Amino acid sequence: MDVIDAIILGIIQGLTEFLPVSSSGHLELGKAILGDHSLPQESLLFTVVLHFATALSTIVVFRKDIWDLFKGILQFSWNDELKFSLKILISMIPAALIGFFFEEQLELLFNGNVLLVGFMLIVTALLLYLADKAKHTGKPVSYTNSFVIGVSQAIAMLPGISRSGATISTSVLLGNDKSKAARFSFLMVVPLIFGKIAKDLLSGNLSVEAQNTGILAIGFLAAFISGILACTWMIKLVKNSKLVYFAVYCFIVGLIAIGLGYYY
Image 1 (cartoon, rainbow, N blue to C red):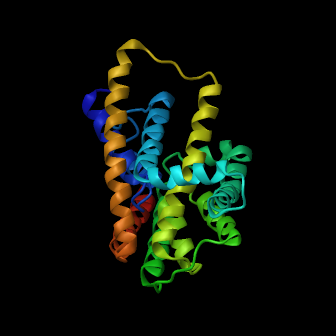
Image 2: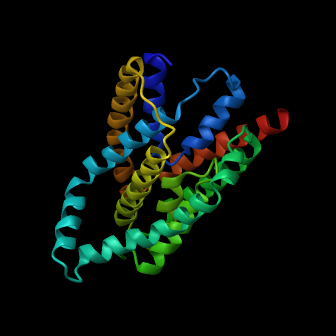
């Protein structure tokens, strides 16, 4: 992997982690169009570094919110911050269980199944379209909503289902305020990313070679910077009801993927 590859992969990770277009789906499409050997083969370590970068970009964008949560938790009282943190924990349950018990089965879906990606992108497009048309409300995320949104996050582990698109759309369709939906969606994934990183680190399969540190650093910076831009942009888009543009994009790419799936 060279410098250009690291920059491109970093930008893709940073953008698609937050924009509702499915990073996993686009990677599978890229493999089908360019061939399995035309794209750089990402090492586990490089993948961990990129996910760490996007997790940090979320923390930077929501640094005030996260700091307020920590201060509220440390007060050891049943305040709004502790309630919100509990909702985050509830939302993590479905994805954590699916990832723990069905990790190997999920990995089998990431083997160039372009047809599946196409249909799932169309599902993403439908969710985004419905969410874009939802009326503005001031309703906060409830405990029940948290679990349902968590289920949508677990479903988004399928290639072609956008995690941010699925969770924000589900939250909005449940009647939650759009800005609160975006905030909850981005914060709920941070513990899962750090948990996955910790699991990979403890597996003992990661190794750093001196000649790779520069590439890792470049990929990290690309993902970190693009992640900050994408996260900030998505918050504004959700508030201004611009999700329909991404719905159209996902629908078109989904149709192309289905065509490719039948062709291949």
